[in-house]
Length: 439
Image (cartoon, rainbow, N blue to C red; front, side):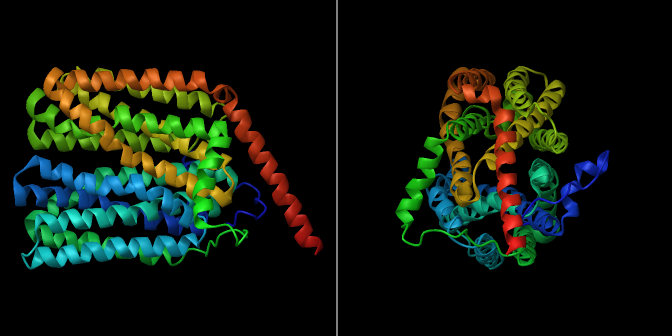
């Protein structure tokens, strides 16, 4: 589905079928299964790599070093990747980035199977993976509007989020179960094959070249232009800031979960696995609910309530007994995914295609911001306790969201603004189609 094509008549669907409406579009269907393979491999890699690092070093700080190796490139490389996304064919960029990740893990697999892997290898390869992710993710985010009609955009993005959350539930468990029968090296061989499968499926997508543009515009001008566009569009800037808040204040709770399971509830690694699965289940339910909100006239209000609910559930989780905490963490995952999916969809609906890659790359930078919240949270946990740190994070999330809504009055007419923007673009598409037909 090309950006400049007139939008076809909506496909009739009702009930549960409407939840999966976007899969009726062949191009998106292929994209979806490629995404499922990619994120299954990524979540298996997180578990297997963490196990391998701790097995090699026995030092929790080594786990932090590997995490930073992946996250920091996303913070610094993502803006550059966004410019590249807007200047090249997005399908080609995704294929190259996915093959890069696949070959990095192929090398890692060989080192493990030959018993020559070292900690420095893992750090270097984590950095390389982070760079590849920085190019792959903005391209993927910017690709969805090229594959589905506008009326299916939220449905398609919700299904994409559902795929990511589904892999968070299943893939880590599969990765852990593979260690006993085939070893860590065998597990890495499986996830490497999944990365190659994702690249192969991406080959079936249509080409998505950059829009016609002034060839005299330099790379640096494009780089500045992306941030200039965000600065000039107050609504988009506000939505980007709003999307960054959970990463800084709320997401560090995920890193602190082992402290809860070991020191607070004493439920061990099994309890940790159950906690992570419940967060994933909640997120999956949240994205499936959001998949049915395309026609809702109050998405802005729902996004606000989801953000506030996320903070409240996080505060309740911090001081719950284990059984209640399982329910609370599921509700945290549900509300966070509803908030983030609506936020990302609103941004994607508002921005023009020629800057979509650069704006999507700023979204990608928020993943690199997560360590900025994790470091002070980890330090404070040793001083005032992990429960207080997580509860304070939930409170700061609520306060920051309310302040952002107060500072950006555009949020009060968010749904109207998005609807007007869509109507304006549909009129342009119809005019272009009429001109093409006349010519």
